[in-house]
Length: 195
Image (tube, rainbow, N blue to C red; front, side, top):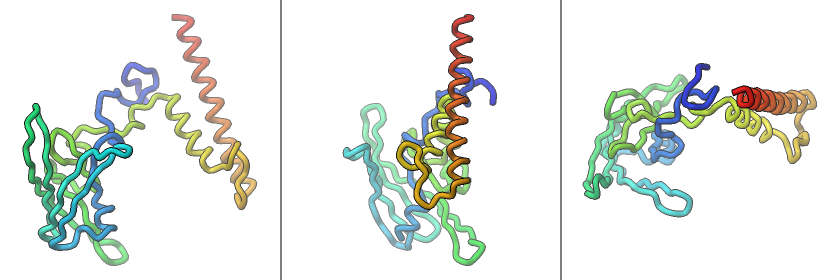
C-alpha cells in the first residue's frame, strides 16, 4: 500500500469524515423491523451514549419511495427538510425481493445513507471513509490481533469444543501479529535514531 497522510504505512490521509461517527440510516434494518410497509409512518432516532443525538420522521407513501423529514441547523438558523428517497427492489435468488435506498444525489443502489451537510446521501457522495482506511501498519496489526484474540478464551486459552488444530492456527496468528508489531516498532525506532 502506498504512503498516505503524515504517518508511514498509513492507508489514506485522515482528512475524510469517518463512517463510524456519522448518523446513518439502514434500509436492511428498517425492512427487518417491518417499517417499509405501505402507508407506514415512524420516527428514527440516534443516541450518543445515553444522550439523544437526533431524530427523523419517516413516511412511506408507497413501496417505491419514502420521505425523510428532519430539521437541520445551519449558521444558527433552523430549517425543516423533506427529502424524498426512492426504494428500488431486486429479486432474491430463492424468491422474494430486497429493498434498497437509491442515493438521492447519484442514484446508486445502497443499503446505507449518511447525514452530512444537511442531506442524506451515500458514502461516496458524502466523501465519507471508514476508519480502517486511515490506519497505519501498527493499527492494522492491533485490529487483526484483537479479532483473533476474541476467538480465544481468557488469557488465550483454548475454548471448550475448539479443535486443537484450529486453536494452534489462531494462536500462531496472534503470535505473528505480536512479532510483526515488534519489528515495525524497532524499524521505526531505528529510522528515528538515524534521522
